[in-house]
Amino acid sequence: MDAPTDKPPYAIAEPVAPFVRRVLCLNPSAFTYTGTQSYLVGSERELAVIDPGPDDADHIAALVAGIGDAKVVAICCTHTHQDHSPAAAALAAITGAPIQGCSPFNIFDDGPRSDASFDPSYQPEGVMGDGDSVGGDGWTLEAVHTPGHTSNHLCYALNGSQALFTGDHVMGWSTTVVSPPDGDMTAYMESLAKLYEREDAVYFPAHGPQVDKTRQFIRGMIGHRRQRENQIVKHMQNGISRIPDMVPLMYKGVDQRLWPAAERSVLAHLIDLERKGKAARSGDEWATA
Image (cartoon, rainbow, N blue to C red; front, side, top):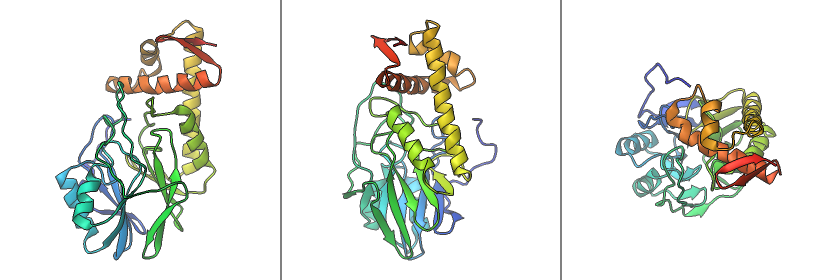
């Protein structure tokens, strides 16, 4: 997707829905679009922070200004990539709020990630599972386990509003990277199907604009992934066996800076096909089974 033409509203607690304000971090990139969007969810008296973002002093200061005199009930992370969770520790020290939400996780991977790496500093006081909730004055956030982009990924539903905070599982500007070994295409597709069965009316992602036609959007994402799978199978049938040879054919119109990350998603698709008995590998070469 092309870069936005309007200057995004950085470092401002921008109201986007009842009980919801968005604060955009100035960390734009080919992988983060305009930057990481943190959310202040709750009332003037009590609120939660979703995805506090990278350990960036200006962004943390913007969050603190947006919080004002409210009590921070919880700091909730959707997952532990470097552009989502590192600010949690600093914000907890300032506000006294507990860090809770996704489980801690750290993995070293030889492939490029959507935001470089996992956050080894993340230490939650409480881990939330599917259906667990936190709440405050007139609001409740419920965790929805959505593994795939990462194994520890959570979305958060704002009960009573039909709003879902989707982290990197569903982004408003691009498809997410699924990078093995922790990223798992089988789990990712199952998580998309899980969201499709829900009745959320709006998605607030960590990157890109909000999504209003949620089920239509999810159908499109599932269809896109199936199209990629079909492309991979056809390439193997045509004797193209290596991922670096597939990606330039599959991602012709995509920024070449993203091709290494695209290779990770192609690998994730191939592993999924291997599980289904539709692909087999020998070293770095793949063929239909």
